[in-house]
Image (tube, rainbow, N blue to C red; front, side):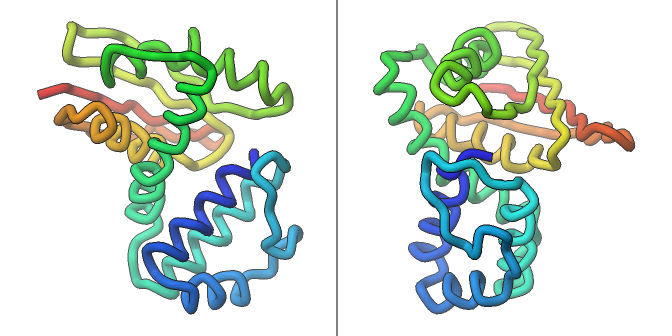
Length: 180
């Protein structure tokens, strides 16, 4: 996973829970990286799972809620990167429908070694889509948080629901998004 995911997560922990929790978080985890990340580095995704698990223990907040909250926090940062790549969209549904055909292609140009989830997207109408999330990593709740963050960014009310269809070899989730 790209380091920006880790650096922004630690920034979220510091700003939301304070430096004491951030220090306890890193002290409580035995991480191969030692908890030292750069935004352009590449790290094992298991480290973020370890950090989220430890934060769950420290705060009592379920890991799924932490990942969704983090996704909401992360989206504006990623939107800044999209803006710097001259990518603009008319709103949440437009952006989400462009995830595979535009956004992920641009990410791969910048980070050829990035391992991105895949999304099959069906546009049901101008205000509703069905997204199929597939990944070797369990980050559907992070994806939901990013979608919620996308709605917040565009000042649109989105209704997002998920149905997990995980298999032994893949994390597979149906995500329904409706703009109200």
